[in-house]
Amino acid sequence: MTIRKRKELMWGIIFVSPWIIGLALFYFYPMATSLYYSFTRYTVIRPPKWIGLMNYKWLLTDNLFWTSVKNTFYFMIIGVPLTQMIALVVAYMFYQVKDNKVLSSLKVFYLFPVLVPGVILAIVWDLMLNSQYGVFNFFLRLLGINGPNWLESTFWSKPSIILVGIWYIGMSMIIYVAALNDVPKELYEVADIDGATWLTKLSKITIPMVSPAVLFNVITGMISIIQLFDLPYILTSGGPSHSSYTWAMQIYDNAFTYMNMGYASASAWLMFIVTLALTILVFVISKKKIYYGGEG
Image (cartoon, rainbow, N blue to C red; front, side):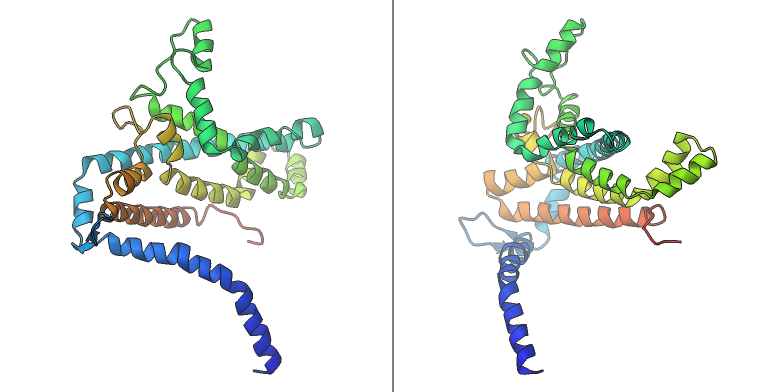
């Protein structure tokens, strides 16, 4: 290696070293430490004591842990498809009116919830869903309907949180709009010549061509829902009767309320394994359904 190459290599290492140090300090070290703590009894006050797989065994017999997992999967199974369908429909509407600058500018409206901190948005929705003076029940009363106790009911607490989550479709919608703009116009022109209906064009051209964007949004949405914390924590505190208690809240409570770091670390690693397994499963299932540009 010449002296010039060595200098370039040295300066390259110097410039990327802040990122490498940050990655090691704030990602790899906490992950390795949490993996070690998951095999220990650690209450912060006393040094960790090695107990092997006991934290994992206790988790599997913990009813509250299973309640949090079931609630999280409820949010994921219903929330992710519903959110993505609405985002795709809204994106398709904007795609159809892209020549109208006034209507296209309304896309910014859907990005507002993404820009507003989740805590503030949750407080606003807490007021809107209030059973006595909330906006939703006010309009229902005008129609002669007694609105439910949205956030105080074990039945309605989870649908209410999903309803609030739908307001975060902004980023997914923008990705769908970008994907729709990349669909070759020639395909639609050929379909028009063949007399294809709008439903045929939607199912045979539009959806296959935007399928990579759908896959990306579904996976990122699924990961976000598994880690869902802020909305149920602020809106319902996990209640009533743990009906909206999520997996992330279970980890938080054990780590910072009960100071049981080992137990919380074991739960966090189980969440990581489940998330990784679900991501791989989605990739395998969708392997033959996703069209990437350049394929035959």
